[in-house]
Image (cartoon, rainbow over all chains, first blue to last red; front, side, top):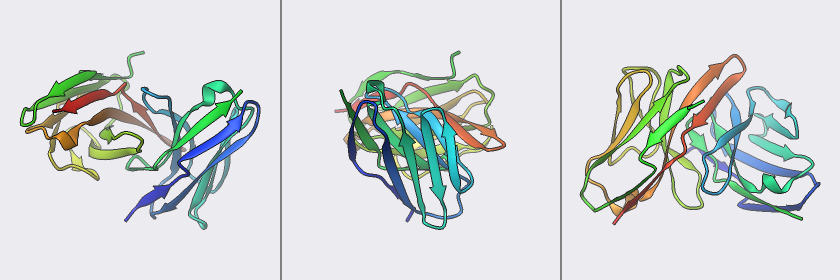
Length: 105
Length: 114
């Protein structure tokens, strides 16, 4: 079946850089997306990779390697407000298990 | 900027009752979706509608029905609610652009079935 695996939790300090990985077992998709979700809120779009390589959007970057069935989200200059859950998604159909990011002061 | 609006925000149902979750988007998107999210988990697709007049099953369609009333509105119906359907439900629409797709979510509907 199709699945996307992420680490359940990541902790980092304010100002640091953190990488959240997403490994998948699926094929034939158009792109890999990343979403942020604060507790009690709705997911919001962060980044999208249609092609292999790095996409940069401000403090957030996302990477995709189709040959390795792997992607990651990179968050730089971490802020307290970045404490949230992060999900990868294949097109609109399959979402990852989610990674809870805790940013410590 | 309304975006995606869904109602109700909170609902408690008794087992066997029926209800409809309403969703509307004002972004003129063709595709709309219903997801459910259980505690500590990712989103799972229930049903989607690629365009007005079409609907398709997602990963977890059992116990649900949908109606794409027009381009703006996409409703989700629980005919006979079960405790296993206690969850947070998100409606979404999708913008298709040259470099990919972006999903816009509603604020969520918290449903408890007792």
